[in-house]
Length: 241
Image (cartoon, rainbow, N blue to C red):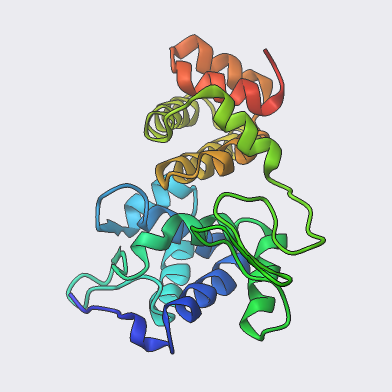
């Protein structure tokens, strides 16, 4: 298996910002990246990614080819229909996905690349002048507004487990997919897939923000089939007790 290394760029931060730039510009690439880095399995097949993301195989291949050329995933020479994690990026997957999923935060990250703006999310809190490095925060910079604070609060208030949520969202997604064939069902399946990937990457607040788009009938289905964690998080996300 070929090994993509951080030295493709001048330093680790530049590699991470390149990832954010690429992923924030393409929902399909973000979906593929999110699933490749989901959970502990190092490599995923095109079929697995398509099933999890609700993308077609052609869309997965197109996005995956671009990600591989940018050294954001690895594509083994002997298995061209598989995509694998870049080990240097894997420890930063949560940060990359979290920032790439927010247009506001991705824009701020890009400003950092040319020295004109504030810094992107980091794992330690630090303030120097007008530049900020923050851990779990919804915004950065002196005048920035926190767009994710409510989702963070919802997640923290429930004491939920992200792995348990991911598992139950997968169960709910598969049940929903098998029980209907309408456009509305397809949309809801896609939302659940995105939230499942966020939860699997350990990003509970992002999963909550995605689940805010779930419909009330899907919540009822979650309750009916007994996925209690998923039902509780969805209820909080859409504001139903």
